[in-house]
Length: 353
Image (tube, rainbow, N blue to C red; front, side, top):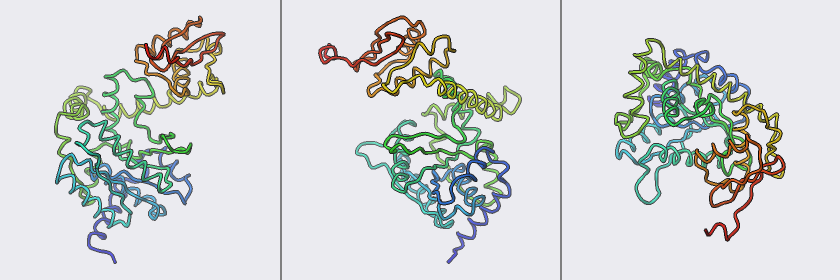
């Protein structure tokens, strides 16, 4: 039987769908979603914040045929005490009103919960990945929007990322996670064409509530410092829609990154025996050689622990093409001979010294 909460939330979903029609979502996502098998289950990362609440409501409203196969995942990092518990209860009420199953988890490892953003994110995705594997789900929907694009881009610029890193977060990201049995999965972000304030305004007009994370107002995490101290000044200084500009740059970088990946695919430089055909890479642009070398390292069982400086030195040696033997740390060496780069495991005697 429908409760008052059910009626409120279903009405809010219908209203926000009229305020944010499918034409406002990322066009690539809509086309991709419509082409997916009707029997496929969709997982939704639900924190209770404005972005994820808007995401769940829009999925529920715009793809009614998928409602029976939606499943939400909420992870409590136990970082904010009673506030975190209230987030979990809010998500449970929302999902119950929409008839969407909710899988809840919480930090249960001995010791203190992760205090850094990367640790919290890793714990959350590990929980969701396990739940998706049990449910044989391959698609995870995420609520990233244009503000997240700008924040991520500025953060990655500060550490020297290339086009692959600066093209994140992608609208549709295909990958094969660890222990996936070779089956590909997808992270899907339909809200990248919208700003956070646009989503909040739509939620308010639709009469939909959401939870605010008080830790977002602090300055401990790098992302918060960028969000609160850098982005507003950057937008004002640009005297234009800088968030939309960053989103467009992300799209263009993704196109360039895909083109480079296709180029390396066509060259197919890593042989079945795991060696890299360096002679075939001679004269190619450095970006292509760099990616081929990355692939070669990832193809090794023990790729080593190269620093950024170490990788750049290895890249330069590969470009020169002369025979060499380059240390990859305690695991072994990269050895170039006869135009092919091979991994040489370190001997026990070598690894002890």
